[in-house]
Image (cartoon, rainbow, N blue to C red; front, side):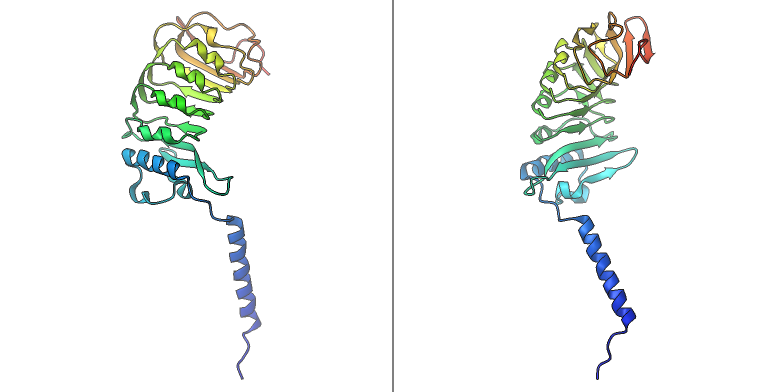
Length: 253
């Protein structure tokens, strides 16, 4: 007559089974695949930048990060809410000194909401195709070797809430049509060469809290207090003759 398993072994088995079920529940269902067009575009970009390595065949949204540390970051964020496929909405590639140009395939990532290409070795001018990424809300491109005038087409990126372009070789003046970027919360421009810039581009930015205009060849002064910037918390500005970095000399709330 076969002996029954000791009660202790049964208890251990049930405990392990419960733990496995809990882990599976916490992880949730598997992600749907990345949109084929997005996946092809990202693989093409990363191949040119030599970032893929052994991950060339992996699903981008399933992988998420190629490298993520204090010094370098190569990662994507995705929106999988449709339940059918994931769209790449965030791309962060920073800290790579071998990255010197932007592959055209990047602009096939038409659902991008956030793009961070800061602290690389990018050169040349800002590609006009950036203006096609109409859903961009965050665009960081500082500390590269980009040159040429600040593009007029930035006015079309009206969803921008955070724009940071400094530490490069861009030329002023700041286009007056920047006034159309009415959703800005953070604007950081700096280190511009060339012509002087007036404050006429500063419009009724109701949500702007940070305004940094370091070494932009500015002429004139902001109104004090700037009634068209009701949420302003931090101001860094540099006039033609003297740089000034501090909180504004008017009350901020």
